[in-house]
Every structure is written in structure tokens, then in C-alpha cells.
Length: 95
Image 1 (cartoon, rainbow, N blue to C red):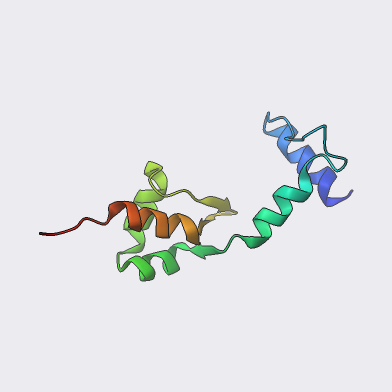
Image 2 (cartoon, helix red, strand yellow):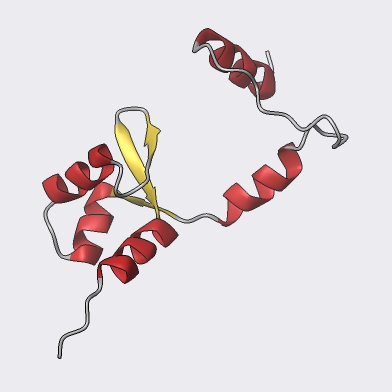
């Protein structure tokens, strides 16, 4: 069974429809693959070190939805851009 078939089977088992674009010859997967290849993911420990907070604080941000993350097995991976966007939005100017 190919990796694509396994992925579709996994989505079907989870009750999700496969996301495809019928107008693209490859089902729209090329654009998504190119985009995901450019995304840099950080571990929770790396995010904590970058933000200078504890790992528990990062987990709280992920679970609350304030910081987007992808679950890989039993761990999370956070897009590096999301960390920088969160920090930019949280930045306040002082007088």
C-alpha cells in the first residue's frame, strides 16, 4: 500500500474527507507539498528556549489554541513562523 493510500485510509478512519482540488491534475497536492516543505517546525523544548519560558507554558499555549501546532505521534511540532507571529502580536511598547 502506498503512502498516499495509507494517508487516505487514515483520514477515512478518522471520519474526514480527503482534501483534494479536482481542478488540479494531481488533486492539489503539489502546492500543499511545496508549502509544507518550506515550513520549519520546532519542538516544544526549542520553542520554550526561544521564548525563554518553560515547556509547560508552551504546552498551555498549544492546548489553548493560542499557538498552532501539529501533533506528531505523542509530541507537538510548532511552525517557526507561528512562534514569531505570536511574539510579534504579544509585543507591547512602553512609554
